Image 1 (cartoon, rainbow, N blue to C red):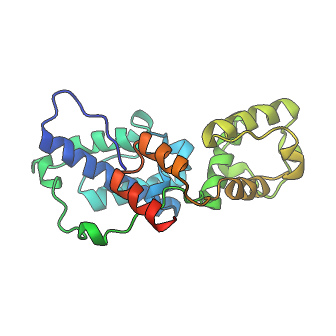
Image 2 (cartoon, rainbow, N blue to C red; image 1 turned 90 degrees about the vertical axis):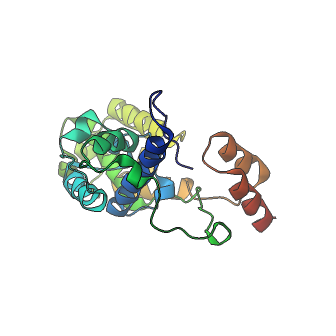
Length: 231
């Protein structure tokens, strides 16, 4: 479920329109990163989600084309999450009221709408983007300068930087990786493959479904459907 914190002075129609605009931004971002929209947390930063400077140009162009906005690439620095960018994008819309976005042109009947699999594993390419961004920040270089197949030691990653790098990775993905993993998976490509496997979806169970409902990432009806489908 997509959650957008409301502004106190936002009319109901405008809030619904902002939710729909945020959903459009997330959908565009998913296309650019070759992910599913359900894999994107709209409150995370674009950098953490895997959007680099080259992809940012394509992303902003697609947002403007799809939503009729007039966002500039530089706005990503001041509005670094999909939620924040959607709020900014709404201010660039032409004179037509934002509320016109509140009602999508068509929608599938409720009983035919597919249930989103919110536990889909992150795409390996997306994980590679994130790892290169985090590593580049530590090495003070561009992510494009990092060879995904080069051993970390040849990239200048010593034990201290390795620990900092893993701390950043654990923070992004909620994992608990430790130093030896860099020896067993000594390149960005190898580590990304491991993370994608580690974060692969597991069968649904009651506890995990309830966790997703409490976090606001799954609706009650979706939860009931999932539990009935998976026993």
